[in-house]
Length: 463
Image (cartoon, rainbow, N blue to C red):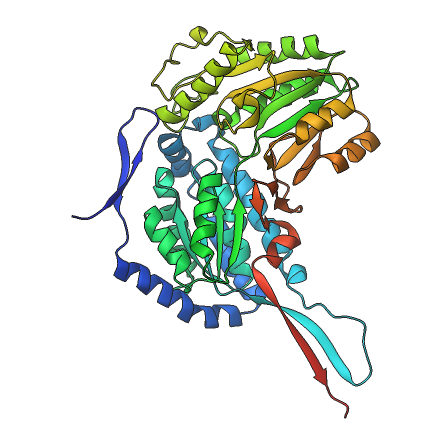
């Protein structure tokens, strides 16, 4: 019997998409085609590859009217926000295309007599991208466009929850006229993905997902010498200093905590607030949170859609219940959000106070619409608590003091430091993390370094 992969819609629990997983022969053919295509693709100039990649981006954007409701059906994001993901997709893709020539240029050390010396950036070969469902276009593009621009061929395995995204990307590449074998979307099981990684037929794997998934990828790659890039979990903190613009901080941290139903690797999951403004902050935060409209993501009025599946929502409910049983207080009455109920993917936003680091809601990734808020005495206590985590993707500081923010940022164990903003990727900066958040980097010129290998030339022309 053919093994099937299904996308179960969080809207109503129906099967939205169903596809057969690739056969062994199909996988082998795709990998062979990618290897064969690599020689011709890498021989093209960067400008020639840029023409193809620009066409891919244009083709994806042309599908916006279809993509927006598809995202709602597949992973629950309200249609009113659907276009935002494509704007981010475009921003990152066009930036990485624009900087490719400079980022991939040879490195030339100081000249010496009688020889020419330089370092080329050589494509890795075949790159395997494993993309998640929560920002399915944004996370895929972080590696897809740079990998192609660098001269690699690409195999993509998208999450089962967003099967349609891989198919949309394949259609965009096909319409752009990419040579056969340069890009292939594959519908794979976890076991098939692990076998591909261990096969020695790919040269780099870029995985975005859970910590447990990252461990599985690392184990599969352990017997090889391939490159491994991992963007894993987060428990991103924010610190609101006493000199912060309070209204700005409240509005943006509410959005950072609840956008995409909290299902963002760099979403705000814990907030530390200076004691002098703590009460005003939590009052304002609760007021904004209560204004969300939880409902059908296909309706324009909805500002908070369902989580990806009922089990994910119940996990977050369990964290909240455990914290409350340990002394935390909930600022939001979930009963005011009619669709919120145990066993439902629809979940109300929640903010917890009187929390501490003995509670899992402050220590383990929630990946849902809940945030814990703690009072702190000063900067030192805030930094200590922000660093008391197994994760380190991003951290934000809310203050009017630029110098102090920079100094505090130097003390925080994280991949990105924000001042007065959060939950954002700047394509000109490296996207990376520390601790259990993973290893490697995407975006910026550094992102190209992880998709190429250095090759040195020492050409002695005077003997």
